[in-house]
Length: 309
Image 1 (cartoon, helix red, strand yellow):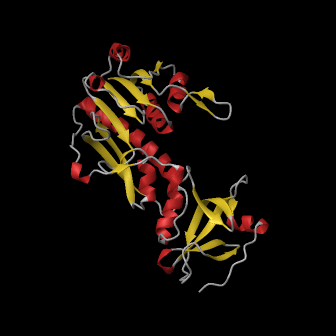
Image 2: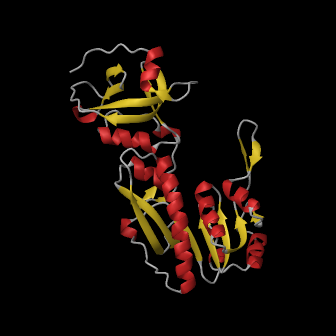
Image 3: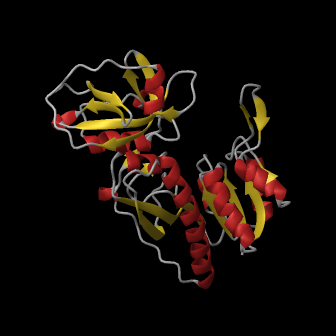
């Protein structure tokens, strides 16, 4: 089975690594062109490219998949199957039709839920109890092809998107190997997705950062967990806009307005939120400072708290 692998970030690199470990015949690796990164804006190789070069695999980085040269290059590789994992480009129909065993994808959700970008983060942001990974056949619509396998997992109450990402990255790599083995054996199932159950996610951006204290304690904690490692939740603390990395539930009932600071001490900074309840921030980062326990921040920035019921 000759495989052409297409992927770019670390989520994809885990799948490529698993294919290498399982000694698949990898005819070529496609990644996005190198992009400028960091303060010096130097061109940087993505995780997939770095891994491919480390193992002596041929790397291709076309800007455009729709020209005849890109198609001829791919045709010359004679893939039996194309594996695309977080590649970042949609494959034109001519490419989708090329490999005799089809084109498959690993996606970080239980499809048809959360098609699109950032499915892992939105599962946390929305407070879902479980999520998972899916393998599917690619078609011309984004994340809408027939499902091959899914595997689900529970989301921890305080699990961040970054932690869940790392778990699903490994689960996805394992599921890919299982999928390819089933395809080779001719036993891979093919289940059409239910369009009436499909949902779509949007990309994350910094407009999502401010915490809405009118939410319930769980909504707020899931928001804080879901926005890590990027773009990170923020809130105004005594006139200072801080990034918020961790918070916990309390058993306080209050009549104070959401966003009011109720207490500030060794346990952290407690804010009133929706439903007459409260949430305590336990870890934060002030501008130009390092991430620290909220109690440490308060030693240099004491907050005068008015008594609230």
